[in-house]
View 1: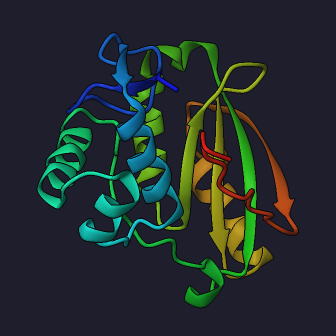
View 2: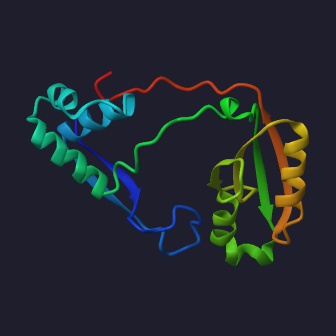
Length: 179
């Protein structure tokens, strides 16, 4: 099964669809690429030799293909998924943010500012009534309240916010093209 993957070109801002720099393009992937991606999505720490064996290719070929997938931006990175609770941040929330109409030209810059704030896990530029959805992790409700007051409500670009507490995060099982 062959397919395409949309991605942001290298060295471009990932936030702020209003920016012309956020042009996406499709990448053609073959069956081997899909096998490599499926396996790495399941286990990003899989050794090159094990990955090559699953894909049925030589280890040197596998290494070259993975490097190419990284260079083309299909694989955006390898990282540790750290539990915020282990860092003393047991309360998570999604905060929707709407900016004032006169602040719209600075949407990309505002999103990048949000991403630098301590406790912010993800920033999503969204369609609909609001402009951003901000995923945060804090120690408790008081820290969350201060986050909203100091970083969002006090910001001159922000028109309104709505905070939604996360009780539980159920992660979907990683499905592959071969499932």
